[in-house]
Image 1 (cartoon, rainbow, N blue to C red):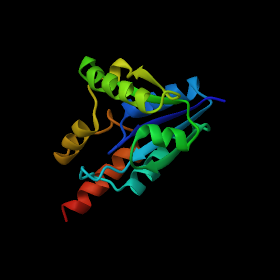
Image 2: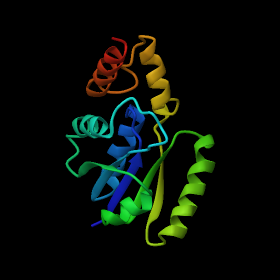
Image 3: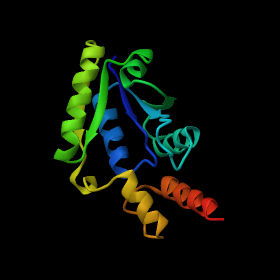
Length: 162
């Protein structure tokens, strides 16, 4: 049984993230989406909120589970018995950083491989940052993520503006 982890901040998750999760779920027996707690960032959602939102968004994918983590992705992979780290690539600009991280992870954990999945073309422009920016100005989020995510983004921004 091949287990893969897909680590990220997912603040918030987008159709691009969900595309990678769905495609990875077909390629691997078990996918663990790791929601990173990064103390260096000020996320829109707490780790717990991001885990809950992603659980709802992936509930139809029976071999996917969502867990919080902090620290190194390779340690998260090992803690979960994963042989593979999945990373999504939107554009060439992502590749240099992701390659450097994959090579570093390979030095730290030679038994864990990194697999890159290119995001489907219709989501290549999309990022969590873009989605939050559009949301802050009241734009239509329906092309960026499903309602369980976009509704949570709008609700969070409304609470912050009270």
